[in-house]
Length: 291
Image (cartoon, rainbow, N blue to C red; front, side, top):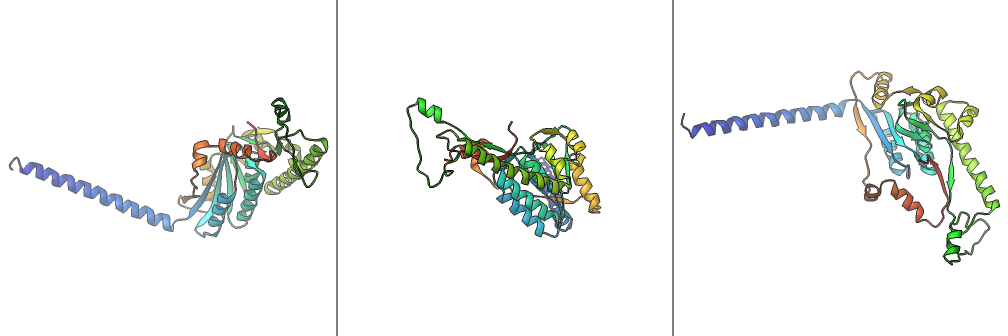
């Protein structure tokens, strides 16, 4: 064999090995695709950070509910809570989905307030021993800049159609009658929170009310109190769901689509505070753990 023929032989071997590797990769890819196409599936929806909006999460739940190949759903939650309306809407959709499929919730490091509200709608809640959870309550926040404006020599006022139309305005202090009115409104929201948790968890309303004073609990304490079902991770929640659904092979996990947001990417949870700070009405009803 001449010196020129050796390199050509080596090249042929390399090309053959690479071609075989590509063929094997294609075969495995096709096999994986076919398996995922015909295998049972479990949906996974991740709820992370402050709950600002419910549209995307509810949309994904509706999509999972209509897919016959998705046998159950696991909510993977790591959130301090968030706005009242979105939390309640997601809770309602969890309860609705639970009528048709199994729904488990799994808390990561944090599952408090509005996030606990959402999770309480699931059939079962999993938490780590040191997960921070609970904080069942509502907080109303407002800003009073009247003193600062006075020091700056700025006078602010408003022309309104009714006594309470500018309630919570940051331009003036809040009157006692306004505080009384808002307190009653907050109690009404809080009572809805309590009743929904009791219904979702199958607990006595009185017991939930006793725990619904804003206290936070570890996962271990929450389990003793009945707010959490099992101490375990996402993997354990998945394995339990497989057993209850009589799935012999590991199902394909179908994750909810993530909508890209440049503002969220750049600012994270800060965008939430900026959004509220730019609003002219400073009142905010939140199911939120204040860290």
